Length: 165
Image 1 (cartoon, helix red, strand yellow):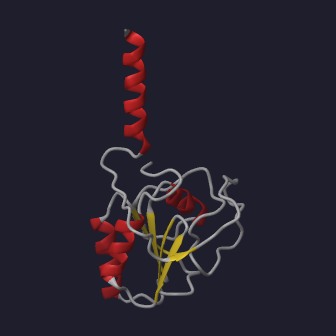
Image 2: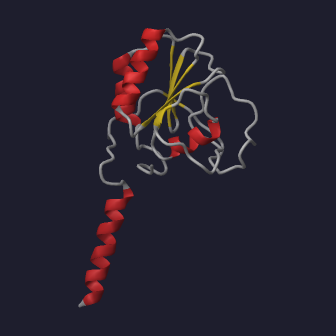
Image 3: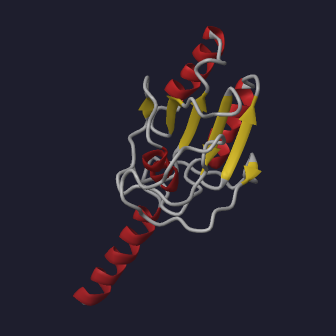
């Protein structure tokens, strides 16, 4: 009698914790350009070398992910990539190329999606704004607020480890 109950409880927990409660994901086609990378394993902190001109959308990453939030200083790519693996979206911007009104727009978006988005400056960016999720990249010269919102809504939690925060 007790064995079937235990099995039922285990199955229910497995279903619930596959995507944690309160974390949404979409079935719509992913937005942005597809980005491939050879591996996505953990590597030692500081071992990734110089940052590329396009914000990475996956690949080798550091063990410690970052929390969602608005960062005033540049963050390590390796930590942000780990957060992408957990289903977050990273909005990075070239601080010398983004105007105050543009920053206010992307800051507002990041605030509206507070548990799913990292916003940070990234001086290596070859474009003013680059938005990434696991395996997808959106490069923007000017912010398209609705497109960024749609990218977040569609692409968040569509990753190897969705919903982990």
